[in-house]
Image (cartoon, rainbow, N blue to C red):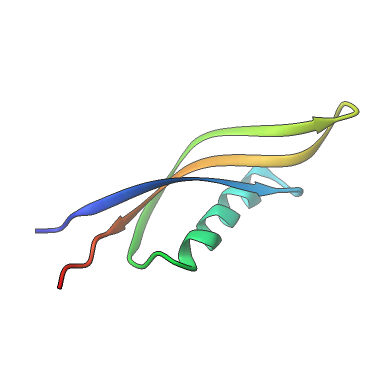
Length: 68
C-alpha cells in the first residue's frame, strides 16, 4: 500500500511566477525524496512603486512515504 504525503510551500522569484514554482520544487528536493507531483494553488506578487518586485507561488508538493 502506497501512502502519499503533501506539504505546502511558497516559492519566490524576481523573474516570473513559473520560476517561483520551480524554486519551491528545487528547495523541496533538497530534503524530500520520492516527489511525485505538484499542484499550484495560487500566484501572488510583492509590489513596490507600482512594479512587481517579487513573484510568489503557493504550491503543494506530493511525495511517497518510505516505509521500513
